[in-house]
Image 1 (tube, rainbow, N blue to C red):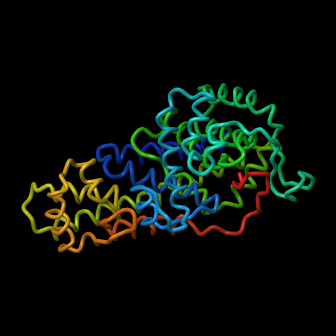
Image 2: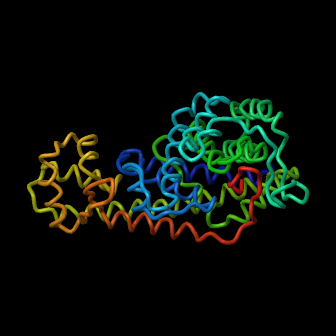
Image 3: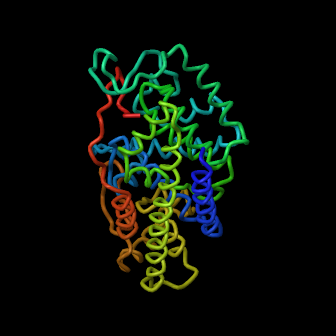
Length: 359
């Protein structure tokens, strides 16, 4: 890589580490908030979209609103799996990430290397004229073994290491579906294992989302032997993600602070604990309160009515969930983050037998 490009990447790494350290002393709620935001942005690259409220409801249990929220929640699960296995990367770890992502959507293929030829672009019936044809499926296990060996190296500058590993994963295209989201979960795993993020999830996909076409072109350039464009993309996306993430953090902090002025119950009440919970899980029900805070169902009303009177939550009866309470200000802040990340522009269509992801 050209020295000036490595210097640019090192600056991005420094800013990333500083952002992570800034939040190190106040992990709740930002660990959950940024992980959810990264999952939503990564999913949006694949045309999977849902509002913050739809995603939060899907986290409570099955939904039947026809939204993409369950797949976005599954992506969050895949990213958690990626972070949990950051120090023990292996082919089996990648399969575990994919299984977490696809278990509900495509259980027959979840956690299995593809067993058929796929391609991106072109007609459905033939790879002739396709934009990209990944390796034959017989080569996938060996290619993944080679990739894992590269991931385990420590003699490559960190951001270049992560960008190239990501591009190689997308080039292998080891699954029939879910390659883009699994590949970006792999990025989160490597950011953690290289020590660039220790406390929170870097919403890098929110930076990529603003320039999806350039992201695709950079992957194409990598396949032609030119990885420089992708490293530039990761560097610039890091800065955009940090700027957007800081705005989200400031918004959530300001909202939570304003609640203290509106809650009328005595200081030290569990109602304040519920308010803290709402910043990281902005739609809750009695089950969440019991699981997260140990609040018995008979005491739920005491706290939720106080928060409703303060204008902090809105009560709704939702089919299959019963009564839920939503912190609309937090949900709006999350939707604003997604809006700032950039509207998706038209991208090339991906066609492959059984494959929906464009990457």
